[in-house]
Length: 360
Image (cartoon, rainbow, N blue to C red; front, side):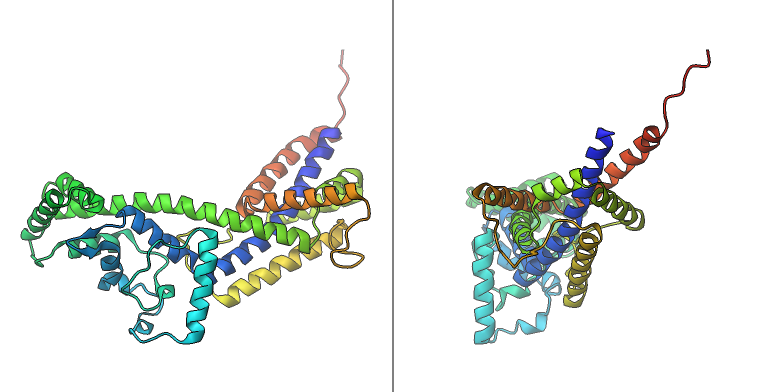
């Protein structure tokens, strides 16, 4: 019986964290959209890939972003007309840059070929990247079989002239591996780019986890979700525990996916869709908390702390635990909740049935 209680407490806590994680994920998505974090992370990934070097005196990152194939991916290419940006837009961009710098995702150098860095694309397909690089390296604009020969000769000359240039070294190595076959060279470029973007995806996940931690602590304080107090209520109050398990069971049975769109490769989400997600997630948490009579929220005035010093310490620890839990993300808690529900459905019949006596 004790094991069943502990499992039900785990289910209740996972469900609370899941509902709050959905809110945190939407807030994080709003911040990501406003700050253009995916575009900044992509730029950092490309700069890391080419080591920030130039080819024949031209900055390779600038050349890539200035290529027609990539410019077609800008959020609004017509806005990048070279005209001076308005003071309000400049102020907004300055705020974004400061916040991105604090997060640690701001690129080291700006892309000089665009008037507004917030127009840069959040995603560049591998094929587009490879074709753009091939065209940039094809300095004499050769065609047919001569294309790869000229690219290989140009890279070989560049490599021997600028031995310290890591971008030239990498591209020359890919050209040698291609053995003068243009299609093979394109495939190598795409694989090289995909490997770099996999690494950049890991960076983005770490950035978003930091943001989710901050958002989680803010939500814990705003909704006064003290993990210690909630766990204690679930453990000691049978009605609260059963109500949470019932709500979690219904949610798990009717919800297929909780993907909050935190992947760096996902498409930007519209403002209205984000607003609807935020309001629906907040309503879901409020509904479950009220129905189960969870000890959350500010019953006697916002931010009115308890009188005792130890109670305050426990409250702060409970908030920190909630924030740390929300930093793991909604998919983590959704998967864990489903696993707990599977275990519960397995052991529950055994608890209800008594051991039968021997027929002998």
